Length: 472
Image 1 (tube, rainbow, N blue to C red):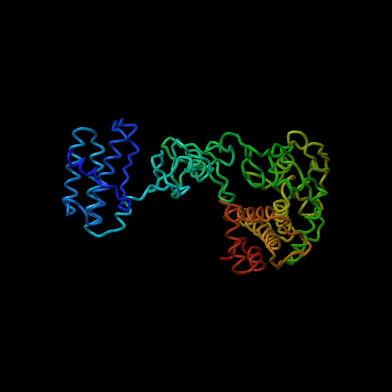
Image 2 (cartoon, rainbow, N blue to C red):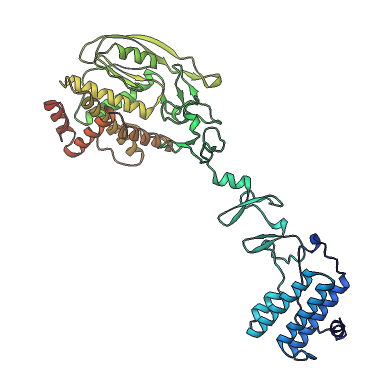
């Protein structure tokens, strides 16, 4: 290595560009060269390049000669010491020669620029580091974008060009069941599949459709793990939002009943006869339904317009919530209904929110109006359809009033929805009527609503009286 010793005898020029060799894998690969040999060799390369840089080289006057000399030195060192060091020398010589030939100062700066941490912006040097998206990071600077804690040696995932712990990534990207609060499991095909309520967008595991999870009898939402629904005496469940505006006894419902009668009067459809109205349990409602003629089956009966005499069990005193969210202290009484006209009484299911109770009463009052005004033997779809139209009209007026809209028909005394949830419930009940898939209530409503919108309510009713059908 005479050439090496000759170079080492030259004075060291501190102004020459320095080329630092760093290999983070040296320690793990067992690199055995001594510190003195490395320093001497680095010094020799730096000095030689310095002479070239200042035009003072003693025997190497061209870049190609310099590169050839460094390659020869690398080959000698490869034979006696270490292949990795020789390769580094070859790469350094090639990069520097190419940079000098093209006059690219940026390339020269890149060769000697130290690695900078993408977090703290300090030099990394020979420390352990993490490579991510083209940048290097100290391990203690590499944080999860979700929880802000260190990722350290843990596996991580990427979301939006940001690193996340595996757990944080799962929380961010995978759907969580709103009922059991667990992540929605994959199906047999490995796909994430969940159910969602079309209005409330409540997401839940498909198994909850059949595993007995309670569903609110009013808004249809499933009971979640962290919220307990209220149990009514007749087996129904009521969520806390619906409970807040629920009507529980007959006396409490009388003002609402009067408001709806005034709504009819505002439409020039006044009902003069005093028709009793009672709130009842589901069992009493079903028993009364069985005693009526011409009643058809439906999934859930919430109201009934009676034309026969009955003895009905009604709710006299509002119950209170007891232990375990059970309704207790409810007082009931029997009422004997006598027939004085075509309509004996109107029954409605107790415990429903105000807006749903009102829409039920508006529907049943339309049955009463039709019977009291000579509309007999109507086709079931036509009669139920026009009754749904009136229920929809009343609900719409309430929701519009709650949104600051003007009320075109009905009483100005009616109370608008008091909260955002009340308004949301009103919109849900409107959608239930409009999108009902049943061939009687749903199809009947859409036909009646289309006729009413095209011809008006009164001409539609006149056409039904004469023909028994909706005008086209």
